[in-house]
Image 1: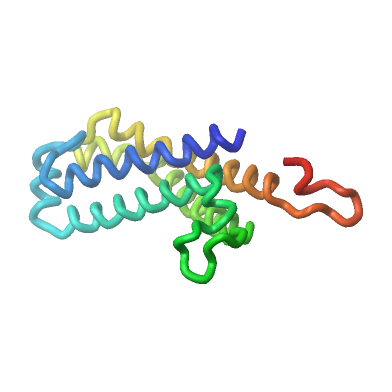
Image 2: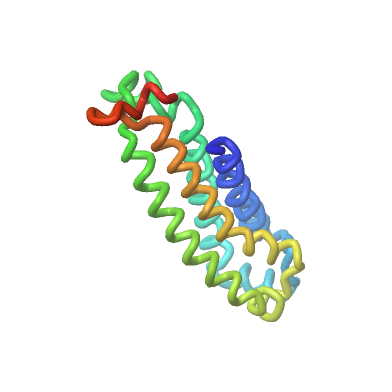
Length: 164
C-alpha cells in the first residue's frame, strides 16, 4: 500500500509542475492565450516556476518514503552518512505537507469555476488540480506506511521493527 500511495504522491505534483514550468517559458499549456499574456506581463510565471520547483523537490523527497536512502542517510551526507534517518524527520514534514495540500486542494475543488472563467483552462488542467485532495491523502498514507515499516519494537506487546 505504501508504494502505491507514494507513486500517487509523486505523480500528481509532477503533473502540476509540468504545467507551471510550461507557463514559465511562455507555453500556454492548458490555459487561454489571454491568461498566458497576463502571466508573462506579471510575476505570475516566476511564482508558478517557484511553486513547480517546490513540487518537484517535494516529489523527490516523497520517494524517500520507499527508498533505501529514506531509511539511511547516503554516505555523501556530511556527518549523517550511514546513520538511520529519524522516522519523525520523514513523517512529520509529510503529514504537514499533506494537510496543507488537502486544504489547498479542497479550495481548488470548490472553485473550479475560476479555472474555467478566469484562466480559460482546459478540462484536463482542472483535472490535475482536482487531484490535489487525492495527492494529500496518498502522501498521508505513504507517511503512515513509512512509520509502520520503520517503527521501533514495542517493549510491551513486541510489535514493531521485526514486522517489516
